[in-house]
Length: 192
Image (cartoon, rainbow, N blue to C red; front, side, top):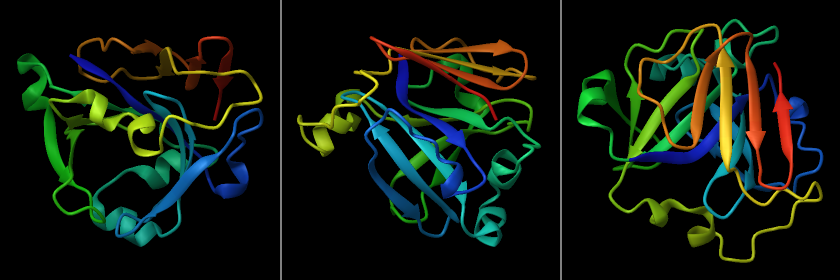
């Protein structure tokens, strides 16, 4: 079963990372990948706002993040990273991608991701709980002023759907790019 590890909102730069109402968690530079992020942490998953810092590094890795971060976006600026085991019927759709700044850590990317579809990748793990932010940051995660306590369900609308089966915490829908977050006590919608 796959579950949500994190949802990604691609933006043109740090100044576009609007996290009003959220306590910002630690971000990081993705060395060798050309991107940087800030994160909003919840117990089991998180929201990542990412942008391109070095377009040449992004291009060298074969990622379509420049198009996803552009404004106006030339690709769907939303995506998700899942965790767990990829169902047998979907395994051939994914290719391994070793994170350049974390030797041995492999993400599995949808091989035929089109610009119109959301970005989708999977951390293949047996122990999903080991990837929870609360296991790495600690149980005392920051409280969010907006009252959000968790990412319960995510809906990503895009002009094209990814070619994978439905995922427990994430729904994909056809339409103009839009990200809807159900966060337990509150909800938020983001557009490009």
